[in-house]
Length: 185
Image (cartoon, rainbow, N blue to C red; front, side, top):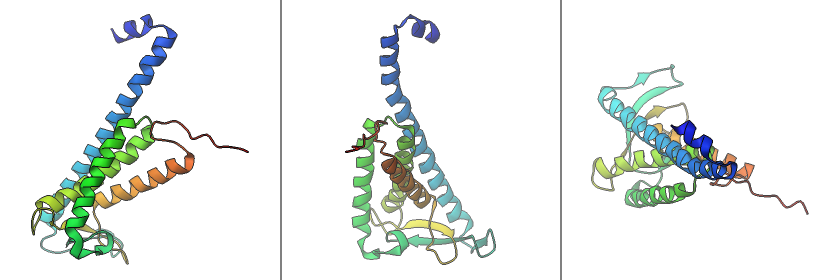
């Protein structure tokens, strides 16, 4: 049926149909990546809470250790007295990413913003629902590398998103997938 319908469209109609379908597919990719990142973050945190309560697990000697901590601050445990501010910033970040996602036309941007949304939402969920209370909850961290702060899957997603966003910006690719024209004068 789909092939028959596509065959009956003229060339210009087909181009219009494909152009309108592209943002839906791209937004679907964004939603899939965000949901997968969010689910992976929450499930690994739950696993850590259950399995790391009795102590650390050395995965690769001292290079990768699973070590449970509760972080009230931001990256590197900075700003521990500003947990509510970080929670409010996370809410704003979620809303901005959702607003920007309406313009997605690039699959790589969809992956980047999906990872960002999943990561920010994962840590925000901790801030909302974990002790000591609403918007003041401590984030569950459990991945420890030598000479590096303990982190979680949400943090990995946020950093991977930053790399994708920087890459797309350097490549001159906008959210829509269009390229920024460089003036050669």
